[in-house]
Length: 206
Image 1: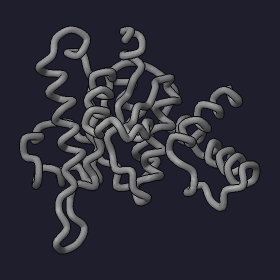
Image 2: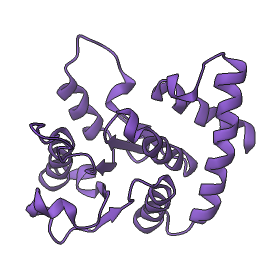
Image 3: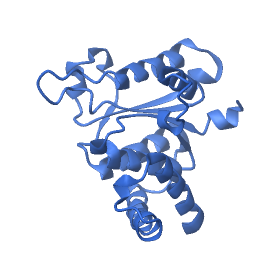
Image 4: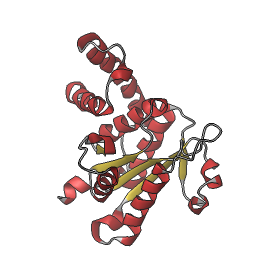
């Protein structure tokens, strides 16, 4: 793998359920907006490769990692904690701290619904700079934008400009998948297809 590819890859570790879908699209859109490449476990459907193998490769190949912990708490009685997200965060952090070379320069963004809620379940993260989004897409877009500016770019378009373009993209997406492709709703479209439309949008609009 070339360093240039590693330096553009952003591993996204988050829930893939319907409740998180709009937040995920907001994260992906912002990643692509700043000309980085989103990398997700669901980008490959190869049944011959275990999920953990996919995760390890994606983390190894990505300089950046965005980890959302907002869904780790059980939401109803007798439901277990969702541990995949903190587990993958731990792998990414271990890769950053224990490997040398390009991996020591990895950058990690941790997102949560509420700023200090994570401390009840993962006290080891106390003192970390966690960004909260309160399940609002606009806040997650601003958080990812600010992180890229702080950690890598040093300057770039404002969060408001990114958010405005995201809303323009939503109208474009509806026209493409409902009006043109015949889907009943945008929710029917797989995330991997959404990424295609985001890349297409930037090719058309810029």
